[in-house]
Length: 98
Image (cartoon, rainbow, N blue to C red; front, side, top):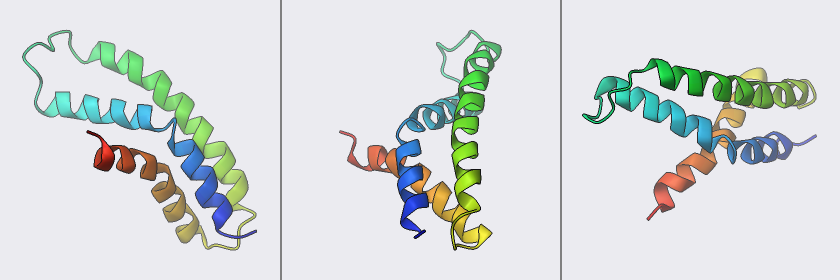
């Protein structure tokens, strides 16, 4: 199995991963510098974000764990390639968004 399989898998998983990554960015940005109109508190956001992140983490972890055992890549290279592949769709949206 070539290193193309982990990259392709994580590119596909990175497309729905845009939502949890955006939610994390929104949570952190409002925690650091809250908007004046954001007066509901952070508890509501944690109720929304926790299930979404847990679902996506499981969706990402199980296929990657299974594929990591079958690739010729070292552990470090596999997980670096996986993280990069997952973040590429979000990076593409940031670069090419109007």
